[in-house]
Amino acid sequence: MSQPDSPARQGATSTSVSPFQSERNSRDEAPQYVLPLVVHIEKTDPPARTDALRTAARAVLVMLSDERSVGEGEWAQAIHDWQDARIRKVVRRARGAEWRKASALPGITVTGESAEVRVFPPVPLDGWPKELAKLQVSGTDLDDPEPPAAPDPSGPVLWLNPEVGMSAGKEMAQAGHGAQLAWWELSETERKAWREAGFPLSVATPDAARWAELTVSGLPVVRDAGFTEIAPGSCTVVADHPSLRR
Image (cartoon, rainbow, N blue to C red; front, side, top):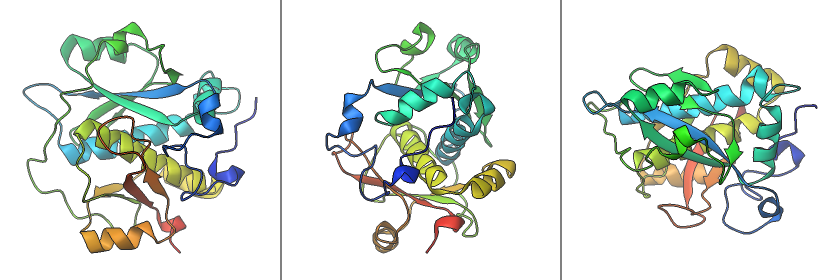
């Protein structure tokens, strides 16, 4: 089984047929899958919000590029089926024994400065492993104890909509969407370079004027399907990768 072409490389653009938009299309006819992400949140030592967002985005990229997710890899069919449908991601939280049980399941743990996020191969929308199904979606409200550093303008930046409020868990999923859209639009050479560098990226919130510029810049834009928290069609993230800048 060969690696499937991404929707972006099949002719879709980031501003037209997006797998995140609310309008019903052919993607809704396929069996629906979800990419589970679990963030490690201990009561006494929660991760910083911005680092959790960066780490979630990197976790998605690590999963997409892992050798088990492509070609004849053991996760390749699940990745293929997931990308044929809506590109859903759900972030849940775990601590203590819950985190240890989740870590025992097949997946990949990605570590940031203070955050740990484990990403798992896609599962059917109604077929979560019991160890993950019982984890809570709520309770992922995180803060930055100190103002985050300014984004590195020479590297990839995931820009968040300054006018849409979301929980940290929702924002982690949206950051993952943005990273995935950027990944789809890169060439194989560009993907390899990003992966070998360890998927460096920044997450930042611009002012309203800058956000308006970004949304019409030609960069990939996430338009959320509106299943949770925000209105359908809301623009949530602009994926700004140096190789995609016009």
